Structure formats: structure tokens, C-alpha cells
Image (cartoon, rainbow, N blue to C red; front, side):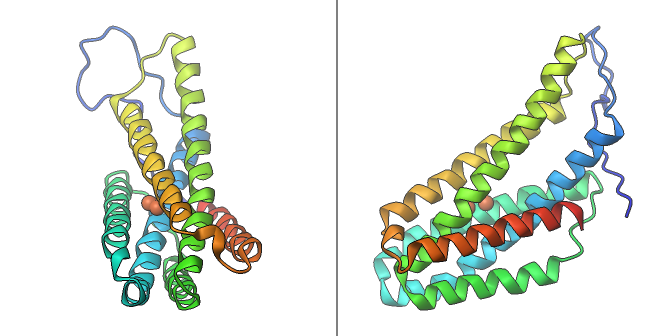
Length: 212
Ligand SMILES: [Fe+2]
Ligand SMILES: [Fe+2]
């Protein structure tokens, strides 16, 4: 399947700077397309997990309402950000959008049914994988930037802004991970099995969404 990601190193306006921008290679373009695609799918899944968990968790533990709302609102913001980016750069969404939607809702609902600790363990597992995932993307883009700079090229504002966006979202995901641990994620039974299965599921979903 072809993609026509328009993220570019090419300036949309003439630059006053004398340095040139190096056009993206096919490989870099594909990497950025798949990065935006998988991020959009992941953030959709995150909103659906919290949407499914919140009513069950909050009914048993009303004091968790502000925390659940805060995490949901941040996920909704992340989803909106990647929605805008995939539309702006004409990246097609993952073909498995409907499947991820069903699985994410199922994961949110089932962990919340197991209780507050399991719901928090789900956030802990998901955010551990997502934090790593965003770090890998940031590292890869920084390597591109270092290479361009070493060759004397200028880096486009678009690419610079993408790195800033990824860093901000990564930090918010890691903040969710901390909240989950503070709220007894580690007390979920059996914690190792629950987080192990969810983390493996996240890695599988990331792998597939980057490709399909
Ligand atoms: Fe997120
Ligand atoms: Fe998150």
C-alpha cells in the first residue's frame, strides 16, 4: 500500500536562511508516515481504554474521577494532535482501526471489572510500552537531524515541531504511568501476568499498525 506522506524538509515559504534543506529520502518518508499512523491508532486506543474504564472505576471509587478525567482529557488531546497530523500530511490511518477500537474497549472494560488495581496496572503496562515507543521515535528523528546538521543542511520547522510534540506527549504518558503506580497498580493480582500480557499486546499492536 502506498502512502504519500507530505511531511517534508522542503520549506513551504522561502527561507531567509542561506542553508539548504535536504529532502527526505524514501525511507525517512516511510518511517515518518508509519510513525504518525501508529501514534494515531495508539492514541485512539488510549481514549477508548479510559472511556471504558471510567464508569466502572468511578462507581466504586468516586475519588478517582478527577484522575480518570485528567488522563482521558490528555489522551483525547493526543488523539486530536495525531488526527490533525495524519490529515495534514495525507497519511492513511491504519486499516485495522475497527479491530483496535474493539480490543481497546474490551481491555478497558475487562481490567476495570477486575478492579481499581487492575485498571491501574493496565495503564502502567500500556504507558511503559508507549513511553518506550515514543522514545524510539524521538531517537530516530534526532539521528536524522544530527545527520542533516553534520552535512550542513537546515532542519525544517515541521520536523523540529514534531520532535517537540513527541517529547511533550511522551512526558504526559510517563506521568500517567506514575499516577497508575501511585494508585496501586502493583497490587493488581497477578500483576506480572496482567502487565506481561498487556505489554505483549501493545508491542504486537504497534508492530502491526506500523505496517498495516
Ligand atoms: Fe496518549
Ligand atoms: Fe497515556
